[in-house]
Image 1 (cartoon, rainbow, N blue to C red):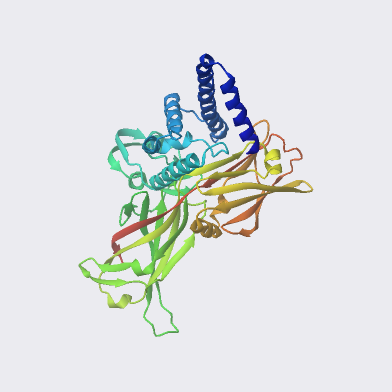
Image 2 (spheres, rainbow, N blue to C red):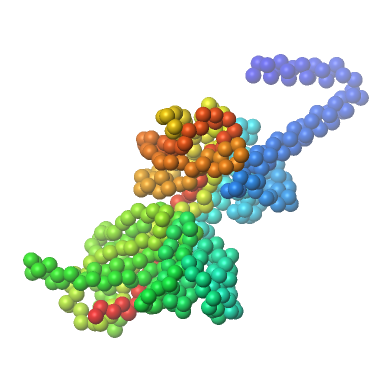
Length: 463
């Protein structure tokens, strides 16, 4: 502060001693330097974006030059002297939509406090909006005749869901779909070609031949990107008890493979069994607060829930309806945390902050032929931190890319301990003695969204 005051005093003295005819010229010189410096800082922000935002193959993200220029101007306007201009710039940035996330600069020390606050506000609003859009399905519009590979490729293009056939099927299908959901379309395909499927959140849906399979569209309930269906009815009687026999229901919840479901539960006090002939006759399956809950792994894009119906003998109907709702926690936009140089990143304990998650390089150690890399993860959202104990965080992707661009996966993972609103993870890789120039790439969902999937399953046969 003292040095700045001395500098300021000398500048004033310099101008006082200068002939008045030269003062105007020097004024324009200083003004031009200020404009150049401001433009230089803005360009530095965008240089940082181009270096930081790379695609999954390590190549640069293709940015629209016209949108890049517009965002640059709006960022400069965020630093305007007038409050109205700053507010308008923030509104204009939000109006660009989720694609703006690829153009926003990272937080830098050189940014003013207000600029940081406004950029954070814009980023969080767009990330939340994008995360909410993830669970919204993309409808299929398609008319014509296609063979199975052609049909599945068009479905992939329209819905972002990968579906492949494990058979060489040359049959052609004539379809007339307008606003059809992914699962409704796939059920029609499987029914017509007598196929079944296996779903994997990383590989997509794999279709294969089925034998003696009932129609998938019978009794299925569709809600957005989700499908609910009854899969099994099982009667059981305890011969050592005087209690009446029970009926065990099994429900299958499936979601589009592009989604990542973190947790789901079925509140049994929301599940009702109804008589189709008289909907007023119904029974609630569970008591208040009773629920079936379970975590979800990346291997499957579906899960099964079971519940018991105790007083079967009191019902004489041949079919029943079942309605209720699942509660889900769904991962939103996946964020990529890219550490460009593992050596310097570890030396400086580099931290990258995105979407309310801070990922920090903590330390590296060696054990003969192995390298143990410890990273810290902290959540700004206490709920997200709490949910991490379900194990979803252990399924996040991480890799090391060497100087030739080759990817190296980790061998195993261990917990490094919990901390306030976060935890540490230890990833074990093959040994790298020289970390200079190695990249570490970590991917994680940034925002977790609560979602409900209501269902109404009709005419389920009891006998």
